[in-house]
Length: 176
Image (cartoon, rainbow, N blue to C red):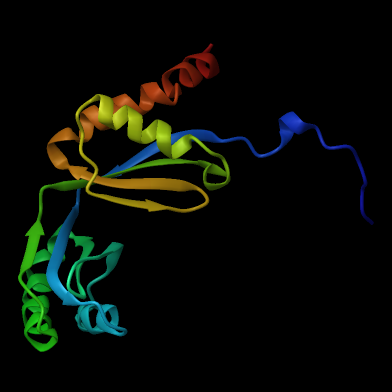
């Protein structure tokens, strides 16, 4: 059977950030001057996939003159191999150079219903901005918001987000 009851508005999904996760084992690859045409993403990522290299975050920006920049992250151990694969792809596509960065980290805030509540991403971005931390990439889902930043700011970012979302207070209250 079905139980019909009143919903407590306070029990509804709240924009609660329950934790912070990070990964410093990633690297970023960017191809500049990619033709902004259907199939370009496939032509870039299929050879990477065929080389059994897992891709995490992907960002494609619309550029000028029907060219775009295509950026994605891989595990640091796969960086050099992915870079080699991409050199062949860029020649085939008529794209620009392959750039990369192995000194990045991914920081995520994790919680329930964050995407459906205004202000959670803004609070994250504000905390990072206040510490002078530049965001290089952003990815969102129902349960997390992830950003790629310079690895040297990882600890500072985690501390700033911990404070901004009052996770230090939640831990103290649970311990008491």
